[in-house]
Length: 466
Image (cartoon, rainbow, N blue to C red; front, side, top):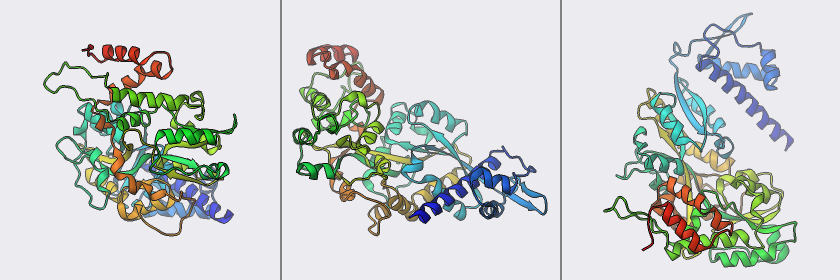
C-alpha cells in the first residue's frame, strides 16, 4: 500500500513540475532564450530525484518547448516556432479532485503534441459576469460550465457566445436536455453528472436495527427513522443545508409547483399563493427543525454537511456523487438511496459540461480537447478513479475490480432517471428564484406565518391578491 501511495505521489509531483514549466513557457513567463533552473534546483523545488527531473525535461524536449545545450542547461524555445497552439481552458477548481482533470491532460499531450492547454481557474459565483467577457476578449477558448451557470446564460441572453455542438451518441441522452437552447440546438457537451441523492451510514442503521432507505420512503419515513438514529447530542439522524441552491428547490419540484407567468401579459406577477408551493416550503421547514435533524447553524455550505457526515455526526444527508469524493477516506461503510418523496418523486440533476468559445482563434484545438475529454478511455478513468458519474454511458456502466470503496448502490442513478428534473422546470429565472429564497428566510426561521410570507412575496414579485 505504501509503495502505491509513493508511486502516485511521484507521478503527481512529476506532472506538477512538467505542467508548471510548460505553462510558464507558453504564457511567456519564461521567454525564449531563457534557461530553466538547474536540475538540482528543480529536484528540490518539486521534491523529486534528479533522474525524475530529467525524465520530465525530456518530455518538454519532445514537445519542442525546450532544447538541451550541452554543459550549459535547458534553454526555452519559442512555442510559436514549434508550431504550438495554446488552448486557454477555464475550469472549476473542484474538478481537480472530482475528475482528476490534471492527470487527464498528460494523455492529451501525447495525442496532440502541438496543442498546449493553459489551465485557468474559474468560480461558480460570478460566472455570468466574467466568462462571457473572457470569451469576447479571447482570454478563454473552452470552459467547464454547470447547469446553473448555463441557465444563467440563457436567462441573460448570453448563450450566443458558445459554439454549437453535434450530439455525441455515446453519452447519456438525458444529460443533453439542460444544455440546449430553446430551439433545440446543443451548445454544451455534458462531461460529468450527478443527481441529488440520500447518503447514509450503513453501520448506524445496523447498530439501531433501522431498515435501510429505499425508493418507497417518504419524508415522513425519513423523520421517523431519523429520530431512532439520533444518539443524544453525539449524533443526529439527518442533515442538509436548506439554503443551498441545489437543495431547497427540490421541495418545490416534489410539490408539483411550476411558476408560469401569463405569456400574453408581460406585467403579470407570480402566483405565490398556490397551496402546493407552501406545502413544499413547509416540508423544508419541518425537516429543518425536526429533533432528529442536526441544528442548522452548524452548516453554512453543502460541504459542511459532508464534513459532518464524514465525522459520523449525522447518519443521513442529502448530497451528490461529486461530493462523495470527499468521503474517500471514510472509515465506515455508507450507501446511497433515492431522495424520499413528497407529492412526487423528483430530484435535481446536476451536470457539468464543456463549452467552446464561438469566437475562439483556437476553435479546432479546443474542440479536439472536448472530444478527448469525452472519449471512452478518459471517461473510464473518471469512473475508475473517482466517485463522479461520467457522461459516457459505456464508461459509466463499466464493471470490474474497483480501486476504492464504492457504495453498493452506486449505479442506483440508472434506476431513478424518470425522477430527474432541472431547475429550469420550475419556470422561473434563476435570479428570481434566488430572490425568492432570500425572501423566505424569515418564514424558514419561524419569524413569520405563511400568510405573512405570502403577502410579502406578492408585493415583492408584483402580484396583488386576487
